[in-house]
Amino acid sequence: MIGTGGKVIREIVEKTGAKVNIEDDGTVKVASNDGEAMKAAIKWIKSIASDPEIGQIYEGTVVKVMEFGAFVNFFGAKDGLVHISQLAASRVQKTSDVVKEGDKVKVKLLGFDDRGKTRLSMKAVDQETGEDLEAKQKSDAPAPREAAGE
Image (spheres, rainbow, N blue to C red):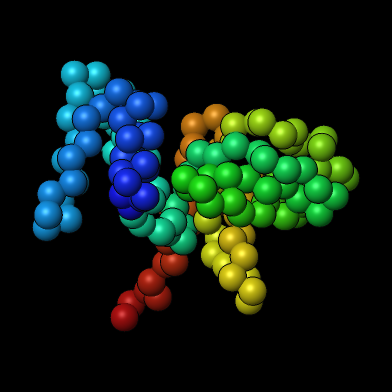
């Protein structure tokens, strides 16, 4: 995480304004008078030190639009594909009808394909609120009724 000569840490400090200190035991301490700067530094550090989790929702930026879908940078330097079938709840004719490069979108990590490529979905997430629509549908479903008289 430190990089050559502390390059990564220096970049985090420069860009966020937060102070970052890594102890000999690996503990990372972040300090700042600005709460937003501290949150930004912590988010950056987590994106370097951990992996994205399947089922989690992330905010990302569309970096490339193709016929078959859009590539979204969603977790530090990680990009994933939102297949055209995962862009919206309705059928999408052209990817560019829904997104363009630079758009900020919310995506759910579906998993990884057999080649290790990251699979994302936009239709599983309410783009306004960031709510997981798949989880909401499951919780709104009526509970199975128990058989009477048993």
